[in-house]
Length: 208
Image (cartoon, one colour):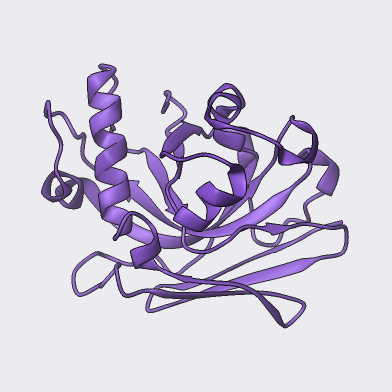
């Protein structure tokens, strides 16, 4: 769950749930030392069995302090959206995991990269976003905003409800990774990934 460091990641994309061997959404904590700059090379050894996925990230400037948060409550709380890459990992051999394993492993959280530009939600159709991720100019993952529980805002509202139930609501300053827009891809040393989310922006990561 989100803690005072203000980051959270979700696993909502159906293809990723299938890849992970889970059949329901989950979420985990993103700590401040997990963020990586776009110009910062990432050592693959920082994450066990690393994989990468493209997501929409939200930065909140209001608390979500209602007992049963809705998408409207989330929209009011979001300051802006931005493209993101999450580098996930697993302590379980060959990613042979189920829902209990991914919950125990903090939803496979590893590192994340935020791209740009940042965008206000006004006029932004998150459901219709088209994502394409390349590795050295080869397309390795494609997806849409609709792949994330129908809309990344739906996924974030789900998280807001889960956290409200646990008496730790989403707060101003939190950053939420709303879930993958397409299948995750294994990472190897020397890989360079770029995700283009049409209508939102781009984000990249390179590995040593």
